[in-house]
Amino acid sequence: MFTKLTPDTKSPNLTLPLCDGTTWSLSSQMPLSFTWLMIYRGYHCDLCEEYLRRLTALRTDIEDAGLNILLASMDTKDDALRAQEEWGLAEFPVAYGLSVQDAESWGLYISNDMQRNQKVAFAEPASFLIRGDQRLYMAAISSIPFARPDLKMFIAGAKAAIETMYPAQGVGC
Image (cartoon, rainbow, N blue to C red; front, top):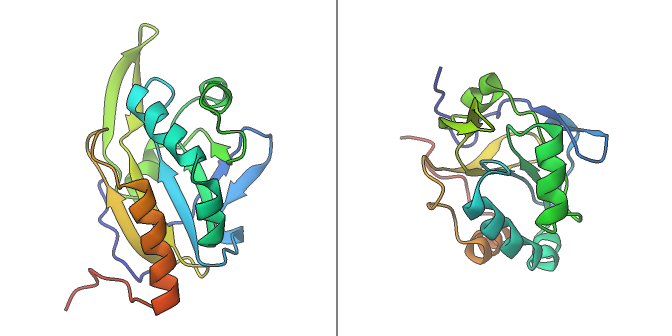
């Protein structure tokens, strides 16, 4: 079931395995500013590779903005490891195994594709900024791979939001 998340309310909890063998949990994050949950389509997606390769050049900007980032997909462990290694993402935590249920609880669009002669579900891209108390600050959810936030603007905006105490928007009347 599709969920519409509301900014400034508690986000769904999320716990995922990481490529390094540990487990990541949203509830244990203690960011200086925000946790940045970035969902990518998976190893099969050339546009994801291009987008995430650009992210690697912004590592210092991400740290300066006080962002704890997680890159996550519905990929298998093997495909997530391939993406991390081949796309140069070794300095970022990469999670795999996002379930359809978790994806839907975050309001993600789900697509299906044929990969290796199997029908495989994957989540379309999204970026979320989440406060340390797990309240959602912002969501950018896409239904297609070529509509994602500009990385430099996104990072600069997150930093400015903290510096100016800019409130969450889209909370209703």
